[in-house]
Image (tube, rainbow, N blue to C red; front, side, top):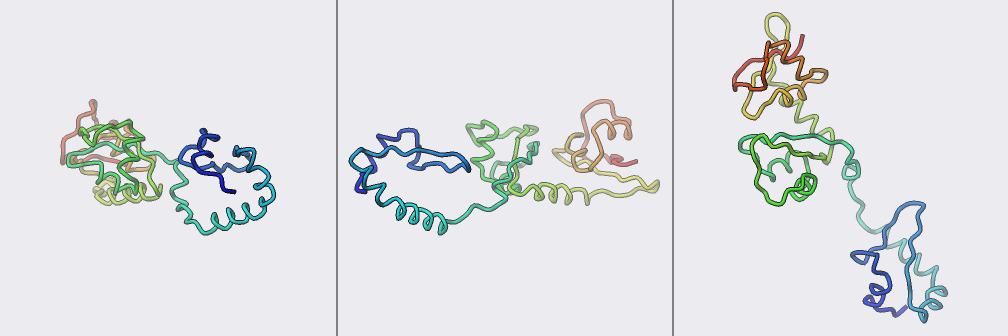
Length: 188
């Protein structure tokens, strides 16, 4: 239509990044200069056809990125850094920083981070890998050996149906402190 981008930006300040959002069943309006309205309406079909063709040729996001409803809480262990944690869960460092309100890349051991894994089954498979370090003792109960960075909560998360209180009861634990190498009963 010959309308300059600067003029469209001036007339439509609510659209950020020069993008008109798309939400199903919701209409958005684009303000045009008066002189361009007639040109637009006479070419409306061609403009929409061009926009549709452009939309179809664009790369679509991966479906896993759209499912951000699965949240995990990760406890920082010795040797962890944002890049390592991000790679483990298939997300970006900037996302972890945003989700947790972090301004720097510095982490503290024991710090809890909220993470929305790219693929929720990824976090479960990582937990499953760790559960392979369990053994079954002579009485048929599963045991787990405490590692660096473990807490009662993180251990309970590795075993479906097991709570922190279960672990405390089965192992006669009163406090929260664990020693590396301690063998815990994690099933009855």
